[in-house]
Amino acid sequence: MLVTIKILSRRLLSFVICLFRYIRKQILLYGSTGRVAFDDNGDRIFAEYDIVNIQYTGPDNNKTQMSVGQYFYPAVSRQFNKHPI
Image (cartoon, rainbow, N blue to C red):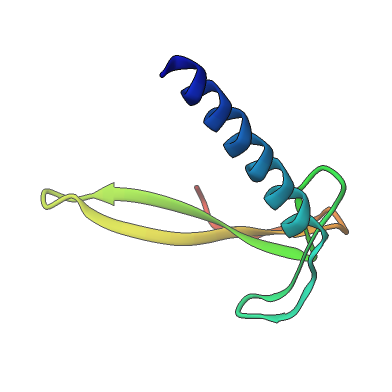
């Protein structure tokens, strides 16, 4: 039984590695968030991120979200708003 589990684990790991390599090579030109592709490290390229500050305030612990900046990859440019964090 233990040998069977080890064999299945190796096969599953091999499958997951192959699947990851396949997905990493794909490029979606019209994804719901824009162009989707990955670099050699598996990091998403052509990505834009909003940097959001989340605070819980007041007696009811109301959640407030404020965009405080943006991050663009691969250009590695950062833009920050002048709002207090």
